[in-house]
Image (cartoon, rainbow, N blue to C red; front, side):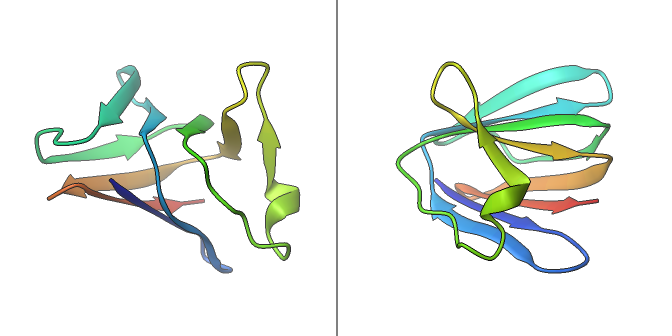
Amino acid sequence: MKLEIISPEAVLLQAEVKSVAVPGVNGEFQMLDNHAPIVSILQEGLIKIDGNITIDEGVKNKFSKSKEGRWVLHINSGTLEMNNNKVIILAD
């Protein structure tokens, strides 16, 4: 599935990923290929990305790697939409 993470400053990531886990207001949830369409508000926490992705040097300092080898991005809040195997996250 395609993942796009956009902040007010820049497009942080555009990549093909296996899964993404996000901090929803009712708890963390994960999306895989062919997930049902969803719109959600995100709270402060970590976006966890699984996949063989390349992060641009200009924004790489915003990401870190977890013990499990997943890319992680801390956000303060945001919104998410998933539809037709494309996830768009507007993150603060």
